[in-house]
Image (tube, rainbow, N blue to C red):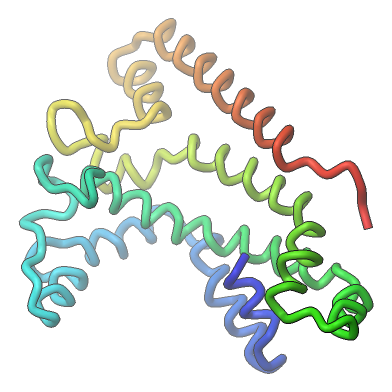
Length: 215
């Protein structure tokens, strides 16, 4: 949302360019994105390791395969996968927020400015409340998308590192139980449980973020 607000405030000539740049990962192949991030996370010669060395920091021995590495208490491999997924999913929500911002009548903002409201007050008291339906939609879609992450983890970490599987998610567990270990009943049970969790989170988000009025 902050980035969408920033893009709406820049010159018209650059808006289309920046929208395309941020939306490109969303429409790109997941496997291609995984290959790009794998090169970035490559130990020793990868881009992130080189940046660490350039600024005088010691990079991890392995970004994706070291079970003892962590980032503020979060396993490093899991943090790396999350960053890659957020980067891929970022542009989709950005486009939705840009469309919602363009749909807000300028007369409301102009009336607030005439009354002496600062840009922050206009955003907090007018723009943000009018975006509640959009925030609800993006929140629900993002949660569902996060539960569906499979290809990134399958190609980057295969659910590892470590015996516990620091990046092992429900979808990967369902896939392996169903098609690798042929435990169809167990995979179906996990699927139902995941559906109930997603449904519960969707109901909670709807209750918290729903708006009883429209403009």
